[in-house]
Amino acid sequence: MKILPVSNQFPDSFYEVSDAIYADLPYAPEEDRAQIEALLQMQRDKFDLYLITDSENVRLLVICPKEGRTAYFGYWETKNDLSLCRKAFEQFEGLAAEKGFENLQGPIHFNTFHRYRLRLQTPSWKMFDREPVNPSYYPEFLENLGFSVLHRYESRLIRPEVVADVYQDKKAFLESVRDLPVEFIPLTEETWLARETEIFELINAVFGFNPGFQSISMEEFRLLYNADFAARLCPHTSVLVAERNSGKLIALSLCQPNYTSLNLTEKPLFEKHYPLLKHRTMLAKTQGVHPQYREQGLMNYLGAYGMLSFKKYYDDSIFCLMRDDNPSLRFTDPVDYEKAEYALYTKAL
Image 1 (cartoon, rainbow, N blue to C red):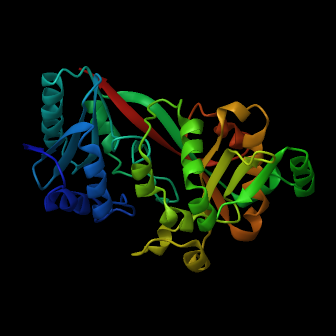
Image 2 (tube, rainbow, N blue to C red):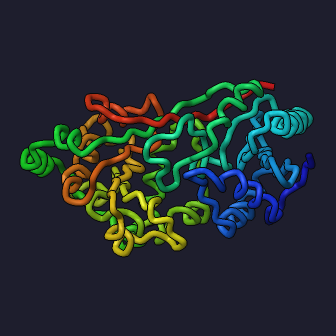
Image 3 (tube, rainbow, N blue to C red):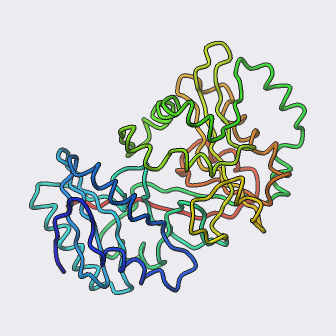
């Protein structure tokens, strides 16, 4: 097992380890080599980075902040061999202790804007776009290595007949929206590009107080959330909410189809790839209200807005990756659902 300082790029074996592990599984993490190496360039001034690997069975990126007492691990993949995995994590712990860190946390690819968490079971949907996925033995490995759960998350699959029960009276909803001093703006690629900076600022305001949130640069935001991302969104169910008088953005809901079943080798585009889907699952990916405008029922309106077009365009829906104490989960509490659970782990040195 070697410890390799990382600067601009990972060795080819980094990707080969992952390819081998997921070769026979019905899901695999989305790894864009160019995107990963662009992210490394952005992070190298913030962190000291080390890759622990045997180049065949295990890889583990050690992420050491320039300041703070917590070291992180990300891009962790391992074959089903606890002894090999233990060697990698022992080296991680030794390195972190040597540098004065007191806690370990992960898996997290630098911050919560990128892939993080383990999935604790495989649900019926196998995988949705940008879902954190991993072999089933990963959580057990971390527990054997002395890690415990820091935060838990859920995704919930809602069947169409249940959705119909949640919002039956569309007319009443539309009439109630007219009484609010807000404007609902369908979110398209053009709208995203025109209001990109405002969307970035809104997301920082909405999620800035979440545990583990770290602000990022506009450059890093654009790496994942850009015109290509906007083009995959569903224009019928994704929406921005603005104050009617000032035009200020105060809430958003980002929804898209689950394109995973298409096994695309190109970036998904709603207009091109939605019609190819045989089973149409709506992913409710991100919903939030600016802190200054909460307690006005806007979160319920965001959920309802997506449901208004649901029957026409989708067969079922997944509310994605919400913390288990997030008020957004309450939207689906009264109905039957299938859930997948996820966890972020920690260990004190």
